[in-house]
Amino acid sequence: MEEVILESMAGFEERYAVEVTHIGFDQNHVHFLLRFLLKYSGGQVIRLIKSISAQQIFTKAPEVKKELWGGEFWTDGH
Image (cartoon, rainbow, N blue to C red):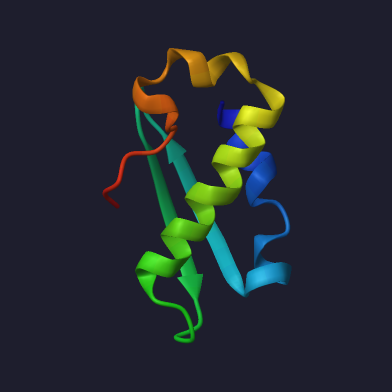
């Protein structure tokens, strides 16, 4: 999943003016260090990242969705 998440972040700065400074992976969670313009709220940026990366994960590894509780890749929190 790490590779798919990294691939989904490619081009984020050009498309959304969100600079992905660092992505750190742990056993069951991810840390993002981001810089973005004030035209977006932090919640908007997180929702965008979660939406795009989940779509990519379910496209490239559809079997993952069957393993998840409720079929959602990300939790509701930030």
